[in-house]
Length: 95
Image (cartoon, rainbow, N blue to C red; front, top):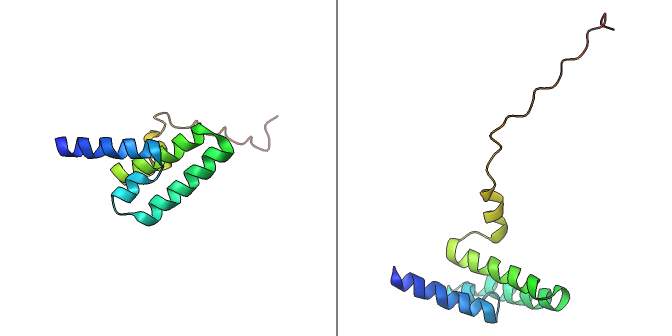
């Protein structure tokens, strides 16, 4: 357990230096390099918030196997209230 915490901490520090580093540490070099390139382009085009988003996605994929968007999509519960049934169509003789 403590070993996993240390490993995740090292991955988090790596992500702060270069997005994709946690994936590269896991041996997924191809996706790690893709995240690194995307992170550098995102930072140049959109700034540090985009850099953080790419790093967060990489870290999430490394630790849980699911990307950030997958987590956000699965985190929204289904609406407990069923949609209202549509109003009945009026009959021909109704006015």
